[in-house]
Length: 111
Image 1: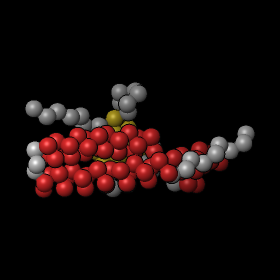
Image 2 (image 1 turned 45 degrees about the horizontal axis):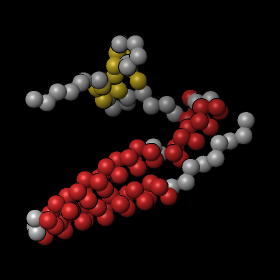
Image 3 (image 1 turned 30 degrees about the vertical axis):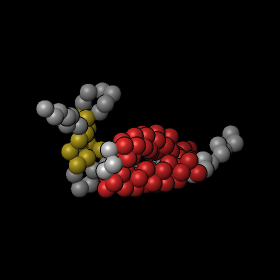
């Protein structure tokens, strides 16, 4: 049986969502750049370059591991079509991992 949680209703101008901290529902909308302070803009500028590379590297390494296990298994069973699929899987996840690893992180600004 599948289960899930219902935490947000998307609207055209924003969303009505459940607050994860206060257990209440609130209407939220995207912030415009003019709504932000200079400090908030600097923080966002730093964070937009990070792009969660650690998560991408973790997911792609899991994908690589699954692909390599599958590739070895299909070669042992001599099912060449599935081995070709597994090899393609490894190439794609390897490219994602290499791209995430090479992406540089910006230096922290001086305080």
